[in-house]
Length: 484
Image (cartoon, rainbow, N blue to C red):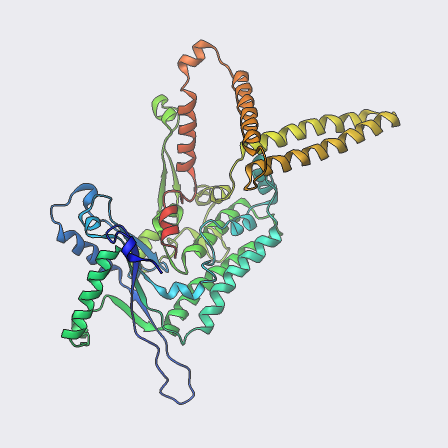
């Protein structure tokens, strides 16, 4: 326990939670199962909730105006979740309120030690969709081993079972709507005292139907049946498409469609920030031009197609893929011209990142080994072949020692003179960078005409982010802070 006498209550923040819902009830028939109820927050009421906060400060403008982050639940229009992160200098922060989130606790049905099925950085479905040659080349570029497809298949099935099994076996539980407030200890004491006063002075009153309710409340069995229909159809589609060809041999059109189905699996079972999945949410995705292309006029504006869930959610109340894009009988896009407008499957990979230092060391090793192997193929003298083979073995052992040394220096291990070894390693890396820069010198005329190297790197990274299939970087903090 904290000694509150030693803590500044105006600076000490705590999370305060409230639960809203209907507890499970005993069945009318003796011996029957309990009846659970699930409460889901209504999207319209969440928007009105944000509006009420803004009405309290009518003069708030710009960054002081509260917008709130609305999440889409189960690809539906009327059910959602909400996050409000007050700006640093907002008056509510001065009062002690810094954060609010409202979400259905139905997501806890899939919780396993704070891990949920189909995490947003899951690449298993993408790896199963791509052909083996492309997948191998992509991971070889960044000097990483090709993913084991058996492990990918096991992981994909595990996520599916963690959705399907609970939906069929937990209908007797009630799931509430949870509202969490991050407040200072001073504000928490005021809230608790006010709630005690209301309990003592006011009796509990039933909510009249004509007064409306900010939540949808249904039997848990009904909600589970709805989620089963939403998720298992997508799972069956994924299985049907991936089985159209041997492993790693799907056509490029089927690969693109399979990636879209896998992304739908990620967002269909809970609440997500759907606009971040731009190829699912939008009908047309406009690719921004790079600064060089804008200045020189070389590049033409590009447009890609998406499934258009935004339009179908507004029109039909549920996120169906837009009509005319997919031939559900042939399990392919409706035409080759449509398939060409969707991104390459490699754009959906989240965990493929280049490691320049490791890649450089690996390239040096391959260069030396290729040279020795070439000599071995041409050499006929047995004595010289033995020498080359001995050298090859010693070179591999040396590389093993180098890798162990690097990971010991960069790792969490502590030993004598570690700081000196770290400085030596950093100096070697800087020398290698200088050598690479000296090899890429250009003439003075080329320097005047070219864009500075730093600007080129920034534009490349910016273009890579704009061309990326699923931009999760900007929403990563929100997703981790409010993981559904």
